[in-house]
Amino acid sequence: MSDLKHRWKNKQLREQVAVLNLEKAPTLVLQNARYLHSTLKRWMSGNIWIYENRIVYIGDEMPASADEVFDCTGKTIVPGYIEPHVHPFMLYNPKTFAEYAAKRGTTTLINDNLMMLLTLEEKKAFSLIDELNRQPVSMYWWCRYDAQTEPDNEDDIFANGAINSWLEHDSVIQGGELTGWPKLLDGDDMMLYWMQETRGMKKRIEGHFPGASEKTLTKMTLFGADGDHESMSGEDVRKRLMNGMMVTLRHSSIRPDLEKLLTEMKEMDLDQYDMMMFTTDGSSPSFYEDGIIDKMIKIAIDYGVPPIDAYHIASYNAARYYRMEHLHGMIAPGRVASVNILTDEFHPNPEAVLSNGIWVKKSGMDTSSFPDVQWQQFGHTKMRFDWELSEDDLQFSMPFGIEMVNNVITKPCHVMKDVVGENFYMEEDQNYLVLLDYEGKWRVNTTIKGFATNVEGFASSFSSTEDIVLIGTVKEEMHRAFERMQEIGGGIVLTENGKILHEIPLPLSGIMSDQPFETVVEQELKLKELLLQRGYQFNDPIYTLLFLTSTHLPYIRITSQGMYDVMKKTVLFPTIMR
Image (cartoon, rainbow, N blue to C red; front, side, top):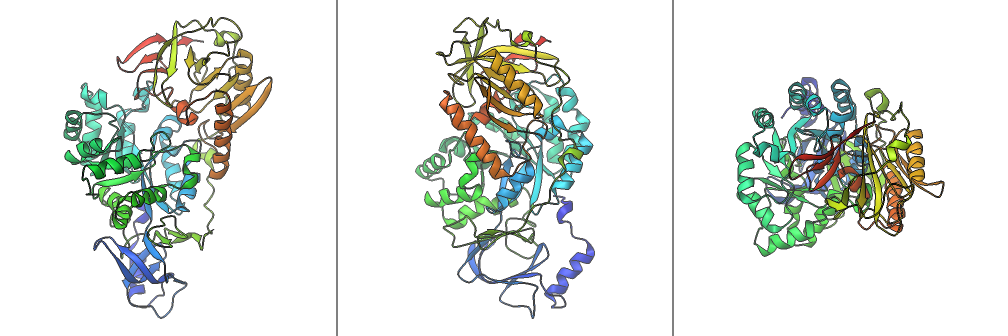
């Protein structure tokens, strides 16, 4: 696995050996450390020498001098945690999530490239990856094969040359996730070709197989899928293990399944954890208030997973799976100096974090600021509209609409009221729903049942397609929300009685905030509170917005092609050209 960030030059390698020869001083020594040795799978005691961003020695010896000696007496040290499945665009951005995650001990992130594919030119996307590599974390990427929706320009976005360029990039370590796997089963040879190319480069392929049968999982294994994160039961875990897949145990804002999975695994005597990893699956911001991978380790230990196994699931297993155990997931010479210092192994939220040789948290205090990213120069700018919302855009005549079953699953429903007038009847939990092309070329007009009972105006540029979602019961307020979203250059806006109730500016392509992670958490919690007061009956409005246009989940979606039946793979009603 090639990795330019951690490819040390000859001069650096000579300096590291010189430290071992006592010709140079270590930059840091963690003295009197009780640490996890992953090869021996036991707790060891000794001193850990670090030179710049690399561990150069573990053992009993102490150097004559060091730039810094940190006494770890009474503490426990484990490798930095690895999050193998990040969607770094859930209102937050890759930099702010990485900063927040590192301070909770998650120092290696493997990120979804979907929004880069949809919003940035390839050259600027790769330049942004280089810029993000300046952060004091280890950041890797996936390469998507499909958009998980039905865009008009999918052939351009996912052109063969573009996918190959991503797959060949040093920071890309896997293909997928395979949200479009039904196309593969139906004979999509282009996807199969990309999978073959990925395997030829010795990179992994991540599945997305919710509810898949054992036979389907076997077929996907034969096609080349290496792992999957969609287990929703102990039996799902067993089926994937039987196929030799890496099983990523998920605990996310829309699928907080870890306790259920661990309970059912225990009942089935599934106690072999070497082929398992943890993920929070790109959760909404507020889900992370009480932790990321550290939270999952705590749950695992509480549910009977031996501590060493829990820490291996969080680090060593992922490093081995991605063929980068020479860099991550282990406290041993040659590895990147990313470690967590804990009170003890039963408290995985670290009191100190060393990431890439830099203290990002020390004695419970944040110590390192992460370099700013000049997003605009890479193409993440405010949305700009050269068109206005017209009266015709809010005309509704669709004979059926969308009904929410839960946060993300939808089904068709009949329109319950006359939708011709200015106001929708507020006693029904049905609202106007519009999807508008960002460039103003087309629109889809329908209704949505189950979203809320009395939201007057709501506008969002946050979607899986970068198009505009309008929801509401009063057309004038929907117009007001749209205009405010337009003024701030993209974001989420809620209006009522002629006022802006709440807004979340998303100046980075209308998808991501440029504010600190903690600020975005506060903004999301306020939005959720206001929507709950207005009849939103689920727990994750951010994922509701993201998946309204996503065709990898049943049953009815709005897309750039029109109202789309996911199961039949057909457009029920086409978009209306503006």
